[in-house]
Image (tube, rainbow, N blue to C red; front, side, top):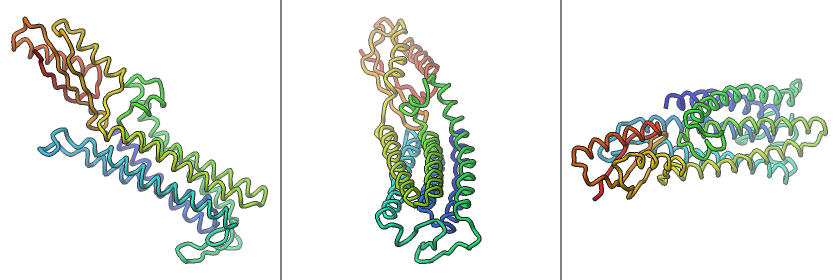
Length: 323
């Protein structure tokens, strides 16, 4: 939990500073790509606030109404991040880029350096200011901030990969229950990709004198944001609905149970995530009929410890002896 929170705080600071820089860059230059990147960074900043709320809420102690705790709060707030903030930012970015392409730059933006209308207020950059170099400076500064945040997120995800013996980031994306770190890592990755797209669009516009490249980069950034929004929403949905451990992880736990010489048969075996890195196991087991009640209790305790040693995410094991 502490690792996830530090990742989110680092991303919050970085994205807040970047959003301000990009917004002023847009006001001074009128770049469509810069406005899309502003939407992007504002959404990222809001994302971190939602994720911190989810972390704070999930730390509440369990009570009568929530006997397994509030761990799923992180799944819910991460889902909100993916649907509302990523989706809205992606839609606004794509819409702005599309409008610029189809309207030829009329009605709220155009060539870098032209007057910019924002919220019915017109901004005219100073004549001495080179707008393209403003954009380059802002985007390169943003690249540095985002790289710092990405390094923090990658370090936390790498720690989880090593702990769970996953093959890499692709497997981690499919199996992790730490949606907070997953969301931060995804945000930082696409933020860097968005900056690169914006830089390429600005460079091509500078070289050709054609604002088409700046506007198409804004559209591409929006499409990219909406695509990742759908991917993150899907990952959060599986956990909100109560997904079990991956099949291979569950089979390892079954093997631990069957290796116990006093277990005759596994009647039922279920696992479910109730929070990031919080798994509950339910098992219906048929024990050796020769065991008395006290011996069965001892074997249940042994099995609980063995399963928790096998998978460190297991918080509680419920074993029901069957006749």
